[in-house]
Length: 216
Length: 297
Image 1 (cartoon, rainbow over the protein chains, first blue to last red):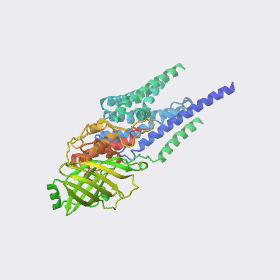
Image 2: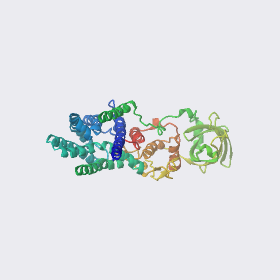
Image 3: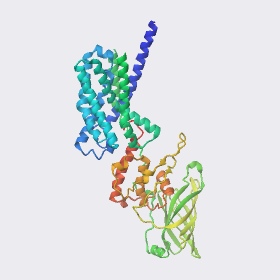
Image 4: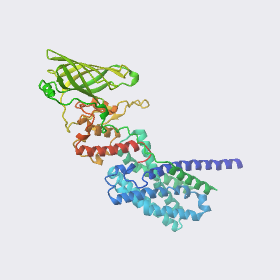
């Protein structure tokens, strides 16, 4: 009996370790992508095909705010969803939580909305990215409000949704990689697809997680 | 305990990433075509009064057609067919001067000829200071506008040591309205054993004429890198650029009927519109090359 319990514990530990390793790997890829633009280059990588817009100061400003702030929200993945961490050190949970909220609501979110207006791939992907930014800010705001009202299970649900959208940075690029490897589509065709696929599926998964959590 | 552990993971991830320089995968495979390859174009006999004489006789012309491999070493990856342009430049006494343009090389030749019943029989040698030099032996019929014969290399160990040709008299004139007819064709040497397929050039490559239309990012953003490369190189092809790059050469030599190789450097001939379009297309080519199939946008 004791043995069975400890192996179950080990199994959990093991799968958590795998999950964190995978997450760390993707975070590392994201940091590499971010560092391409540092120190502020406007003719590299993604910006090299946004030359029609880099001349506009508000686009450029929004782009760099987005790139250099959004990377930090991903750090929340390490700390904010751990129950033991939250119980042991609620103060830290709150502090890091506020950091996530401020970065999202005042930096990464609004800047995402602005660059979303100029998104590649036409109206469809422009709507996708603007909606993504809007919902991300909305869900984050809902989560803060619920936390302040001490509605903890609701807070948790909204934060799961918010972070699911934050993760679209990773999943969007993963879908692009997979679709290109499998079907070799034209560059803007794949872009239009992942603009939607990159975050809507995340929300579906988030709802599944929320339902499961509420049940247990 | 757990807290520490998580923090260490996070921290090491950041440190690791910071220590890794961001390497932009810049395989400059398609950087050809703008550079002049003057090292290969030894002095070409220029126009003289003799040229006028030839022109009067109706000989001074480009003779263009396929330059087909006859004797080759298949292990050395020979190019089976190139487009060749044999230009006859002047005659002095019983010596004929000319040059050939093929595969990104301009080589002068000179030789002797016999004239019989309006047919010239010519044996002409290239200088011999280039690895790929050899001897042209051909019959020229100015009246029919044909030139045919063989070429043998001095070095018999080359991938191709003998080629034959059956050329037609052709006039070259830069014409920006020349179009690619958008036929699907395979990219040379791109056979993928895994998928059992060749990389294809799609209709997009010829949809817009980059010598005539001012392109916008909307025009090129949804194009494959290979199509962009063809679209850009079509500009050079209209000016008669002789391609060194095998893939481009294969495409223009074998798939584009109007294409005539006349020069190894056309930079000075490009119009402002063309220069602008080249810059735009290159930007998207480079982006596609570095980012199309990698993790990112």
